[in-house]
Amino acid sequence: MSAQPAPPADIVVDHTGLLCVTLLLRRRAAIYGAGPGTVAHIIATDPAAPLDLPAWCHMTGHDYLSRVPDSYHTAFALRRTAGARRTRSDAPWFPADMG
Image (tube, rainbow, N blue to C red; front, side, top):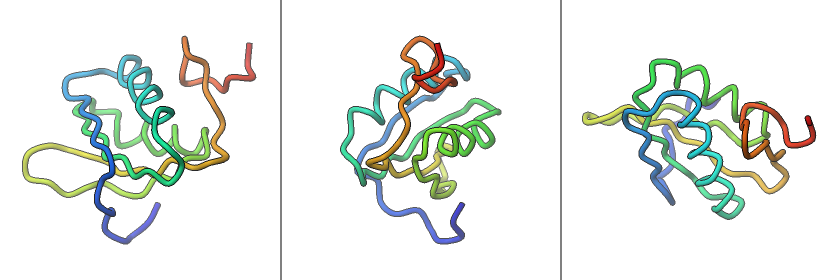
């Protein structure tokens, strides 16, 4: 996690009102559809998001950058990495190589 301010977003993914499982499924689809180096700002109202997003980045190898300060919503910045580990499409909290 970086102490630097989050860089501007290349994409914004709005997960307002979604809870963990649905949030993970949609985040997975949005992030894997973007190219390496893409900075995504993930808007999340799930109370677990401040823990889940950095943990998911750690598990997959994406770079968790920081929380994005904003007066309207809570957002978190991450950068998609080229060598990230894929997760299961039906269970994105598990690596793809886990059957």
